[in-house]
Image (tube, rainbow, N blue to C red; front, top):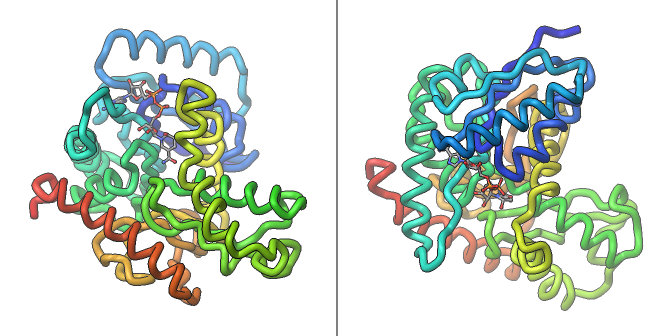
Length: 328
Ligand code: NAX
C-alpha cells in the first residue's frame, strides 16, 4: 500500500463536494491502492461548517478503506497545508442582477487569496484543479499569485464539456460512448467553448464521416454542449453536480495517468492562436503523474478558427476585467 496523499477540497459542503468526496475516498480519482487524507475547506460561515461536519460523518459511515483521515477547517492555511492536490470548487454564485464583471471580481478575490496560500503551504509537488466559475479566469488568477509553483501546475476543468460532447456524438451515431475518441474542448468553460469535432473518431472512423451531417455538427451539436449547463438548471432547478463531480474525477484521474489524452484548461502559451496569457481548454497528453504536454498538431479549418477566435475573445475580455487583481 502506498503512503497517503493529501487532497484539499474547497466548497466541500456544496453540492459538487457532496457528490465528489465519496468518489475520491473510494479510489475512483487516484486509484484503488492510493490512500487519501481529505482536507476539507469551507467558507467561514456557521451553516457551511455545520453542514461540513455532516458530510464528514457520512464519509466516516462509509468506512472507506482508502480514507486515512479527514481535516475540517475554514482556514485555508490549515486546509492547504502540505496538500498534494488542491481542488478549488468553492466560489460565490452569481446573484440576481449581478453583472459578470462583478462575479469575476468577487470570485477573483477568493482565488487571489487561495493562490497565495497554496503557494506558501502546499506540498512541493502540489497540483491545483479549479472548478469554481468562471473557472478559466479563476485559475489564471490563482496561478498568477504563485511564486514557487509553476503555472503548469494550475489547470481548470473543461472535462464536463468534453464528456457532454462525447455522449452527444455517441447518441447521434447510435454507438456506445467508449467508441468516441479524441473529442476535445477548446477555450472557455462557458457557452462560447468549442467542442472540436474534426479530430474526433467513432469506432475508429472520423466522426464527421460516421455522423455525415455537417450542419448538425456545426449548429445543434455545438449549441447542445455549450448550453447544457443551462438546460440542466432549467430541468433540475439546480446546477450540474453529479456530472461535475464525475468530470473532476476524470480530470484528475487522467492527469495522474501517463499517456491519457484529454482536455484541460491550461495556460495557452499561444497554442491554436489563443492569447498566450489566458487559460484555455486544450487537448493534452499526460507525460508523468500530474504533468502534461499540450497537443499542438491539430489542423483547424475556417469554421474551427472562427469558433476559437470567439472563445479567445471572451477569455481576453475576462482577463481585462480582472486586470487589477492580476497586478497589470
Ligand atoms: P454550491 O453553492 O452548492 O457549493 C459551493 C460551496 O462553496 C458552498 O458550500 C460554499 O459555502 C463554499 N464556498 C464559498 N466560498 C468559499 C471559500 N472562499 N472557501 C471555501 N468554500 C467556499 O455550488 P456547487 O454546485 O457545488 O458549484 C461550485 C462551483 O462549481 C460553482 O462556482 C459552479 O458555478 C461551478 N461549476 C463549474 C463547472 C465546470 O465545469 N467548471 C460545472 C459545475 C459547476 O457549475
